[in-house]
Image 1 (cartoon, rainbow, N blue to C red):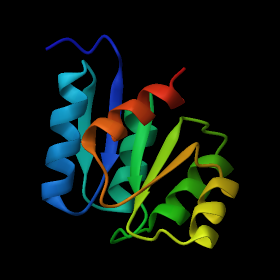
Image 2: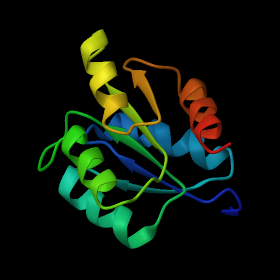
Image 3: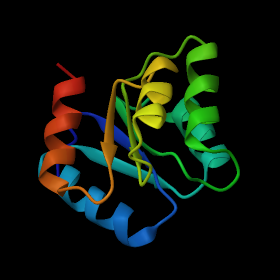
Image 4: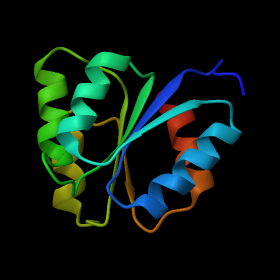
Length: 122
């Protein structure tokens, strides 16, 4: 499969969710790399330079909010799509204020995830 659309980094500790995300993004022509904790995900983001990051908030090691803050503090403006079970308005606003480009609440449609990744890459 070609990676003509670039590499998407998924940072998600629930394997069944990351497997579905990987499948749908790969089907759309994206290369996909998955990490299961925030610390490893941040290292991968710095090493791999993905075109976009699909980032869970509730992660072991380093949560998604701290990950996003560290990324932005380092001057990295790779598009970030936060994915979380937390749907409260305050959580969405905090994520967006910290530099996330979009926010998707679980459960979500994998097709909507792909559409939102494409949107943040426009």
